[in-house]
Image (cartoon, rainbow, N blue to C red):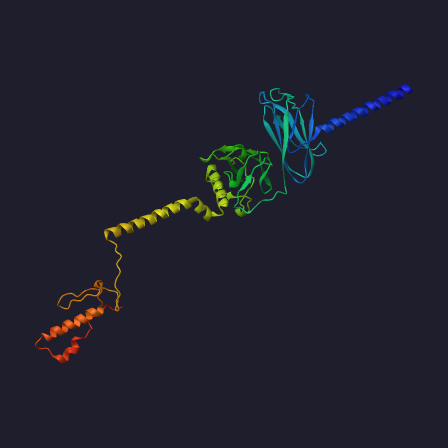
Length: 391
């Protein structure tokens, strides 16, 4: 009896220790995925790792699983990733994970607030070329975008984004987030598929990459559009997430409709928009950009005008003479009374002087006339045909 009791007690203790061990293992395997991510591995083909993902409110999550395996092993899937609800039974999404330093993205779609679990195990396949176990490390990280993110309208402003996971914009329920660190300038444009999507410009190639949260699609850098060496994101391949016509003033970022333009033109337009914002408006931007040129042109025009005036003055074409004052006007007075011309106003002669000389000359002529009638003298002093021009 005592032996039986001892056996039962030993069995209970073993089960307790085993249960405690399983609980500890299970707890250890439910690793929270923080901001820095988790690096882990499988120990054997039957090993399974669990990771906890917590959404504090309604939103979307994209899980990145990157293989840290350095040696090439062909196009082989080494892990199987699955996202489950809090009960660890309700499957939400799943995918195979490639090896050889590849990164696989798994988008959960929109989820309610709560705890979710990522399960990583080995891949089971009858084709050994498509599946294989490895104990090499992998890295798990998450990007979460919450539904509370609002549009930042109105349109007309660019946005600078710098950190990986930073939200570029949210349009009609779709969220776009930055993939890598590095400063980039963000705007919006309409791609060839008719979708309004983000567009990033940066001098760092990796900085213009971003992700579509609902699908996990990644947009990479395309080319250097300007001589200054700016890279831009090639977003023409993104499907139409924002469908139909919408008022551009309701968009969260600077918008340019460029269906007929190349992506390089979009990049240039966004860079110009940022320059206008920094200058304080289009007028200020114009004078800041062309101010020196305008000043140079103005200086040249003024210089040419002064040069022409000086040259003409030196040649006598232009003179600066001071005319004498006259009680009867400023026009040059001249008179020829038959006995020759009288002095002009340039000789400081006034109209009154000429009038006096005209009368004196007329008197002399009358005296020499044998038919002169002294009583008609008043008639010869009449000045109706003389005097300065009427004002």
